[in-house]
Length: 311
Length: 249
Ligand SMILES: Cc1cc2nc3c(=O)[nH]c(=O)nc-3n(C[C@H](O)[C@H](O)[C@H](O)COP(=O)(O)OP(=O)(O)OC[C@H]3O[C@@H](n4cnc5c(N)ncnc54)[C@H](O)[C@@H]3O)c2cc1C
Ligand SMILES: Cc1cc2nc3c(=O)[nH]c(=O)nc-3n(C[C@H](O)[C@H](O)[C@H](O)COP(=O)(O)OP(=O)(O)OC[C@H]3O[C@@H](n4cnc5c(N)ncnc54)[C@H](O)[C@@H]3O)c2cc1C
Image (cartoon, rainbow over all chains, first blue to last red; front, top):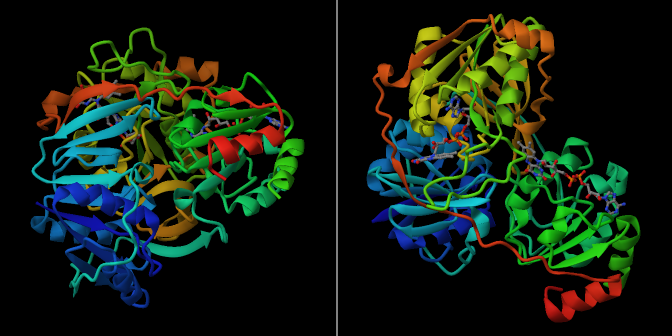
């Protein structure tokens, strides 16, 4: 058996999420990876991919059509490569989630999203109902297309391999939507999906100004900052901070929830964290039902005190 | 412009579902059902495009059990013009749903299809992308802003590192994310009026599509529950526990 893993390499680097997808595919036989991007990033991306251990070969496709991870040309490329593979795998990131279902439809395959566990080559476990139910599925499709819930798989190493690189000639005429612009929230902090510690805030932070109280604590812990939907909807922080059923799924060693009530939809994104700390002034808040350590009180006093206590 | 909005009837987002004793599915008897929240957002966006004079007709469709007609009536009460119920014994998989929607698109020729980004029961996040593939149309998933331009649409999308804007020629597929808009409630007089709006019923089996599932459910289970821990009395105690007991800092 052979699997192809689509990597998110548009900026010239291979993110941890893609290395988790490779780890998930490890039980599916030989692994090739597909690296795509614009003409100016592809060489760096391919070189990084080649260093990942356990890869049979790195296949690359570059061109303006691939510079921004648009689903239409990527799906067409996956369809063109599909005859060589039994499984096509990607991390369940914005690009993976947009591209694999499209490619699957073109191959007449039912895509299997958000896989948490691979039992065997055709049997997969995935969450439904905001993670309140885990369903074990067996696919009867000849080919399987999966996206991977990256929080469920430890990433493979970034270095140690030396895979050969093969440049592909992609099918043309597949550019349907056109990239106009991007607004990336700039941060020096670790990515949410890769962070060992996450400090997360909700409605209790009250405002964008109030939310800043989490920054010194995150700095002190080398943490990423996350948020509830309410904090994002209220404009305290950008959309990509949202953790939950419909945001990012995370499983850090330590998750500190501040002023977050613990709605089902929020828990869906963080309840696999190793240790959960909840800081909330309402001792009845549901977040305390999943927290290892709860501290009842006003976060505007507790958070600065905690930052200070960590020295 | 004509807009098609597919909507799904799902277990209400406030319900914490339970797996049936036999592990063959989830308890649905007596459980509150509602329109998938992302589909309310999709309907709302279509209504706003009509209010701006961009859209002229809004057609909504649901594939599922006869009670999905109630969900369609809700969309009609919000302001959709017309509804189609494609009746089947249960909700088919996204691939089959996309194939059914393709037949309706071929028949109704909408310029735009707005779907929810995901249904909150199965969380597949797939149907819109699959339909776009089958139709060979451009797609913009996870939309937080949709604007008509001279030659199509400008759609802002929520992506991993922030947001990005794409230009799409019509016809196109858009899937709605949470922050696209805040859906309106259907006012009582509109609920009455909606009863008179046209609702056509088609049998899924009459469409000549193979609805056989590709994914067989072997088992359903609730994940191991996380046990509640302890409440600490002070910041100092918290730091001590994190250092010496949990050893995470
Ligand atoms: C379709 C759908 C999808 C959704 N997806 C997501 C998702 O992906 N992620 C997500 O997070 N939510 C999601 N939600 C929303 C979710 O249902 C909740 O509304 C949301 O998580 C609540 O956010 P919150 O905890 O910040 O706010 P609230 O529930 O209002 O809780 C605020 C908490 O802060 C505490 N507090 C207030 N002031 C202080 C203070 N000074 N000190 C200490 N504590 C204080 C309060 O006691 C309260 O517990 C979704 C909802 C729907 C319908
Ligand atoms: C209680 C329950 C029991 C199930 N039992 C089985 C079973 O026994 N065997 C099995 O194989 N599978 C079963 N399934 C799986 C299920 O039938 C489908 O696979 C699943 O509903 C489709 O995924 P989704 O709705 O999450 O799609 P998504 O791709 O997340 O939906 C995205 C969008 O597509 C549109 N859409 C999706 N479905 C419809 C629809 N029906 N009508 C109109 N628009 C739609 C909406 O705009 C929606 O927002 C079950 C699911 C549930 C919830």
